[in-house]
Image 1 (cartoon, one colour):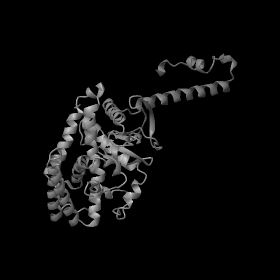
Image 2 (spheres, helix red, strand yellow):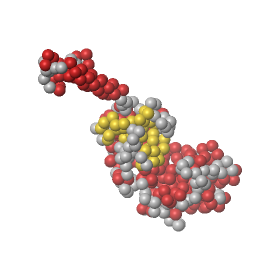
Image 3 (cartoon, rainbow, N blue to C red):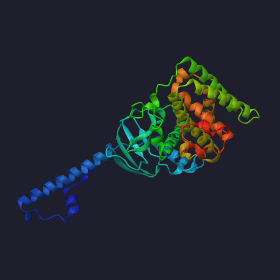
Length: 364
């Protein structure tokens, strides 16, 4: 490109080339410096264009499918969800790409507008682990989904990865509630921690024998109730579960029970939301041809079934000491599914009466 760029071409750019005899030596020197500066600017611009990172096509297709599905789902699962920013920070081995973020911080550089993603895309050198999956105010104080590529996360393949984004996108809806953070602080569970890591590392008595044994009974009672959800035995199974739940509460310290309830409300209902989105997509959404052409594509109906089976499997084989906090995802997800049957209007109370799902059952 630059080998063909002659001085006469550059003169043509800035005006007609003057007669060299008409120029004083000093003017010629200045002109040479200007031309050299132009050449350097062009070279730098080309070098930047060549080294600028790009999203892989598979990542673009997955992200685009998630955004498209989100637009289709709208408020079908949760009222007000479609207004929640779907900001994503995709982590790759060398770079992080910021998409659909309303306030990028100054350490990001734009690579331009991506018409497939319908968003300006920004990048920076990688900061987070490539396996990370979390939602927090990671950039500009805005709740942001921080997620590795499908191959580097537990999802492994495209469809589970897209559905997992909706687990995290639901956290963005939780975070967007005006009183969410004051309500979380009012739980008084941080014990001096200012980073929010207490939500992951709270010293719940996972390994205490009495707690683990009662949790196992509780988990199996919940599995029985979930399995009977479309039968005449549902009311009796639900009552048995709620009785076991009360006994579990009685053996926990107040702080431990508040943490347990908080996790069911936050992570359990996010797991339930994954399932509901996958189920809705299976019934009402047609994936794009680009997404279907990915080698690891599978139908959303398969993913909905896999989520439900994983919930059932974890409930029927409780391992609190081993799974620890992860055990609460299935518990909360299953409780939310029971509420769909026992108290169909519970969504209306979810963001008002926070952190205690048991309040939504008919007996309360």
